[in-house]
Amino acid sequence: MRSSRFIFWLSMLAMMAVMLAACTSEPIKQQQQQQPSTPEGPPESVEDEEEGQTITLVTPDTAMKAPEEKSKYQIHTRLTDFHLLSESTGIAWGITNTELRLYQTKDHGETWVDISPSSNVQFIDKLEYGKDIVFADKDHGWIIRNKQGSAETILLNTTNGGDSWKLSSLPKTGVVTALSFVSSQQGWIMAKGDISRGSEEKSLFHTSNNGGLWDEVMQNTEYSTSRVPGSVIPRTGSVIGLTFTDSLVGFATIREMQSSKLYITRDGGQKWKSSGQVFKSKLLDPCGSVYAGAPKLLGRGGSDSEVYIPVTCVKDNQASYMGYFTGDTGKSWNLVSFPMTGDAGKGTIQPVFRRLHDGWRMVNGIVYHSNDLGKTWKPFPRSKLLADNLAKYPNVVKLQFTSSDVGWMLIETTDKKRSRLMKSSDGGETWQGL
Image (tube, rainbow, N blue to C red; front, side, top):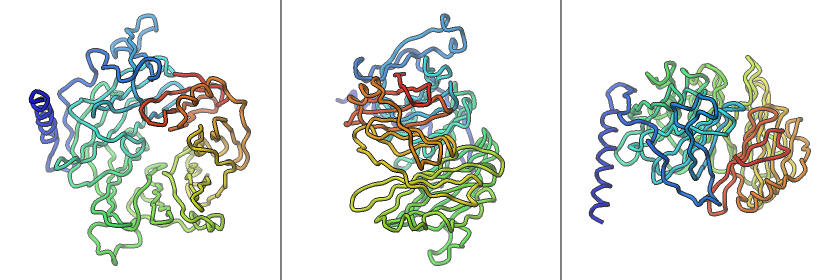
């Protein structure tokens, strides 16, 4: 017991030393981590072979070699999320004993490289994409570790695909609630300060040099409650998601007590205006509560950027799904009510979209596709392999397609202790394990 406590306090002192080294009087000052980001050997198995996610790791120095020349080993791990960057490239991650386990694949999930940051930076809660972790491309990624106790919020940044991570402090930012990057150099961080019932202070920071310097471009903390300017996102409600489509246009969804609001900026985040179209439809009037999801950028096309906002309508303790769509950066919107709700514990997930006319959903283990904003859905025949896996892992955590053909799905057990990654290469008709 004494030995365990001694090791624990040594770890805490080591982490505090790293935090202190990262803190600076400047808004952000980056420092190179001293420890290598890749373990020397396979990490400890955390799941049994039959039930766990098995992935094949390759060492970084052999990752780019021919398949027969790669140095490979297998591990069993518990994944909590993933994100596809292209048909062949994606990241997946989970937390084991407060250490972030982050992996990247560049060959459709056949092999993976461990790109985890130093174990000195410890995590308690699972990381959510767009809130705690973002990758602009296969090389440039950012991870937030919100403040714990007296320690400042910190930002980890890689510019080489996770081969190394730089550590920087985010003093006086509060708790980060959302991240959005439109390129390897340009991004935004939304943070919250003091919180009271139905209200939170909000600050928005912007970088144009890969996090070398962060400027505060919007805040509501220095105004009295009754004097917050109309061009600022108010304290009312909490930030759900933030998405910028380019250097100027951004969308933020705010959840209030029983409703939601959408705020739009067209000057890079300095001035915001509440949308007069979104969340004010007669279709939503019967809802007792309306919950918005984070805005999803579906595709950039100059002035024709496509954005999707998932909406959950709750009435008499029953949830139904809808979605707002725009193809002109928020100048006009379509609200669509999606049919078929399904049972969340039996292979069901809210619709997801790759482009406006390319969407998928699952209802009770059946995958559906839509090409008309989700107004109608075509079911695929039940996939036996997917059905067999859903029998063990009935909760669908995430579904994402990066092209009309290639998509991934993360499923987990009801106790959320084990998970599996599945992949489709034919638009969702058939699935196989990764």
